[in-house]
Image 1 (tube, chains in turn yellow, cyan):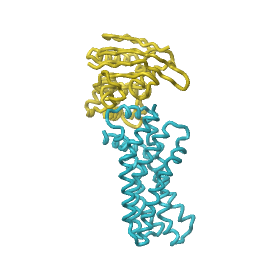
Image 2 (image 1 turned 180 degrees about the horizontal axis):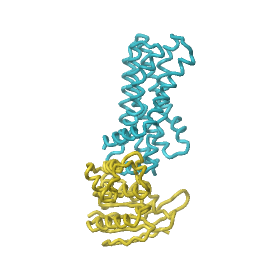
Image 3 (image 1 turned 90 degrees about the vertical axis):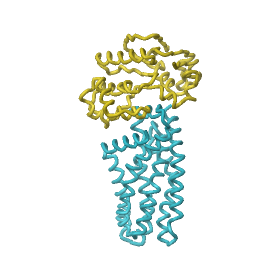
Image 4 (image 1 turned 60 degrees about the vertical axis):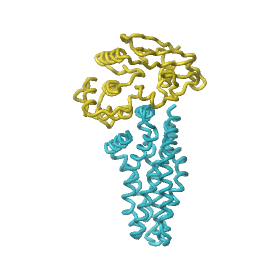
Amino acid sequence: MPVLQGKSLECVRGDRRLFHGIDFTLESGGLMQVQGPNGSGKTSLLRMLCGLALPAQGEILWDGTSIRALKGEYYAAMTYLGHLGGVKDDLTAIENLRVSSALAGVDIDEKQAHDALQHMGLGGRELLPAKVLSQGQRRRVTLARLLVCGTALWILDEPLTALDTAAVKLVRGLMERHLEHGGMIVMTTHQELEIAAGATQQLKLA
Amino acid sequence: MFFWIIRRDLLLAMRRRSDVLTTLFFFIIVVSLFPLGVGPEMNMLRTMAPGVVWVAALLASMLSLGRMFASDHLDGTLEQMLLSPQSLSMLVLGKALAHWLVTGVPLVLMAPVLGIQYDLTGEALLVLTVSLLLGTPVLSLIGAIGAALTLGLRGGGVLVSLLVLPLYIPVLIFGAGAVEASAAGLGAGAHMSLLGAFLLASVVLAPWTAGASLRISME
């Protein structure tokens, strides 16, 4: 089973050093919660982990190989949901989900997309353009990608913003099932969230 | 996935028709202003026609460059594209092709109609249209590099024209030159071959360059 490792990661923004000397090892079935106040570099760290940003120092290893070298192979095993959901205003929920899955290398048909959205509580709204959906509903469309992606590592940046309690419960169930099946999750959240995981670790950024 | 991108961008363009129409109307109006301004001097109009149509096509195609990546950047789709297991170059090629289908093809189709205002002969109209058909995809491809480099910058719209217009010059020279050469009886073959060569070179090089620029812009 794959392992995600970070070695003495350092992040510099302008002339400020946000964090340095971050080490961690995340194994199959493990959950890592990244914590810290606003502006402490949580999003920067997650962007590094998914390869969008370069660490000022240190390296990130997936199964012992640097993610810079793996590229496509790593991207195929990873799903990143950022602050911006990647939901297009002019496309319907189904089209949004199908396009983002195709971008992630998984072609899903109308039926699969429909079922995933139904599961996320968007039944009956699949054919509405995303611009008429509320913030929470748009977030659900984004999160529906987790149902169809089939990747081992999830990197989630504040996945719970704008969600109601029912949706939070849904997402928690989704994450627990993923961890049970040997997946890995790296996430940030300001909300209290109890997730049953084989191994939970907390990474505190000062 | 290449086809997914094209399909998606065409679908988005269909749902936002005003964006497409502004480019086309800009082209039509700029081309139509010259005969009105210069007056009905047939010989002069005939000689300036290719240049005017080509310059208008350059400007019209540049008008919509800003939108090529900007909206994807704003809503986070671009992050997904950079994290896609498929090659980023193919993806950029798909986006450039969609951009051409939406902005370039209408210009090509409109050009022969607008050429009538300049009293161009049938043959000259044909050469003009074919040269635009070969040249406008180059504009979209080179434009993709500029759009990727200026992504997220303030005043990116002005910057993109400063970056991209100089690179359009060879296409302009040989595109407009093709019509003049054929009118002078030299045949447009050489100019067309060069335009074709530009097209092939930009199909190979531009997506790769634009992909690299996107990665830099997103860091």
